[in-house]
Image (cartoon, rainbow, N blue to C red):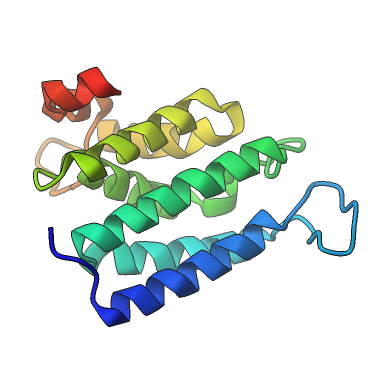
Length: 174
């Protein structure tokens, strides 16, 4: 596939840097380099920026973003961020952002251009589904897809429709 443009490379570096600041966030700050738990609005702003760029990005840029999300959500789980009390990533993002994020993950997981994008997207969905406080992202979006009337023009798919569309080769790998 075609590589990223210089503009996408700059945006990718900016998103990576922003993501690295989240990786410095800890539930308990142990040293001077640790940052406090990110605020919901900070996470929303980051995800909105990623999603805005994802929608128009090249295959390579989309792959970079999916890998960044995968890495970031793993960090949140490891550090137990967005897990205290009734907090969750889904609540932090809100229903609309959850739906947009899952739509992007579904789109990436079904991209006919490259298995290199499909596999990490499905791995991200699988990781989200396994983590109790992150599962809500998928559940919120998939419930909205299931509740949509059949005549509605929605790009978000139900779980059953999504699974049916995943190609056999990618499903076997994941």
